[in-house]
Image (cartoon, rainbow, N blue to C red; front, top):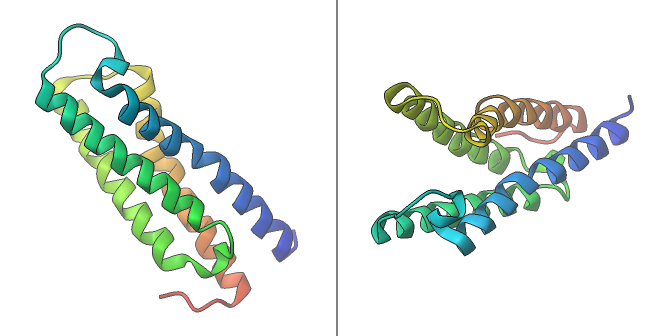
Length: 135
């Protein structure tokens, strides 16, 4: 696979994977905790849920901002991966402390602990192939 083919493939996959935090975050901002279904909820919990959904939306938009010139965006890509990985570890702790969540939350856990780190490794490979300075 040529460098340019691999670079474009990575850009497409990041664009597609970025839909998860962008759409999930936007949904959480607009519908709050009630968007998950269930009964009554606390207003403060809903406020916190919307705040965290806004952060998720921002993470997705920042991942999308790395798409142009993705081979030169290693620092931002690594930082975002670290943030997502830390969130995934927190979710994993919650799984251990409170039980197994819904399939949607398990899928999110897979994105956080598996897909995002793999994309980061791929981005590092593309950056190295481009000869970009990676800090």
